[in-house]
Image 1 (cartoon, helix red, strand yellow):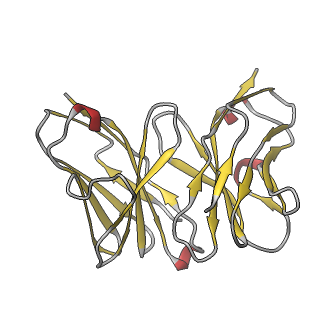
Image 2 (spheres, rainbow over the protein chains, first blue to last red):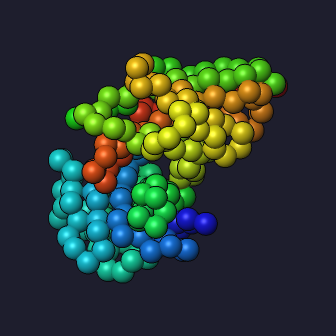
Length: 116
Length: 113
């Protein structure tokens, strides 16, 4: 149990375009989802926390207008990278949790974004 | 503020030998502690966690970890390493009452055949 999926697994886009990444909890209802960014050979950096039905809470230094997060249902959160630039190229990982799974975060497989 | 330290960037172990990946933490209250493993170009897989109770926690793939409150440590262990255990391992801590978890920088484990 506690499976989280992400789509797409990789995406290449042109500079200036927007990209949407989906995160789904497949076998549980996720009251809270998290979005992380990981640079090569580095740890995960938390970008934002999103609770179903409310606005996301962004970490310091993360532009909320740049990285739009929507958590419209208990099984789906989306991250939209707006007007993407090459420096936004990274590995984006989501996680999901709820009281029903003892507050453990389960992670999606990640999305590799490359902005040309 | 909570923090977690993984003092080793890389650990090399011969196949069949016991392995230890070190982790120390700092929190203001009682900690929730986690270990995750990451294979190349993949997300993180949950291995085990400590919330309360027995200090020795057993998890997936034969891994275990021991919570030591006096030393503020939560080292990951396995009695006999497999080549397939080679991966990046992250220790993480969460303070009670906080949704967020803080990750260590990761330790790359190489199991030598």
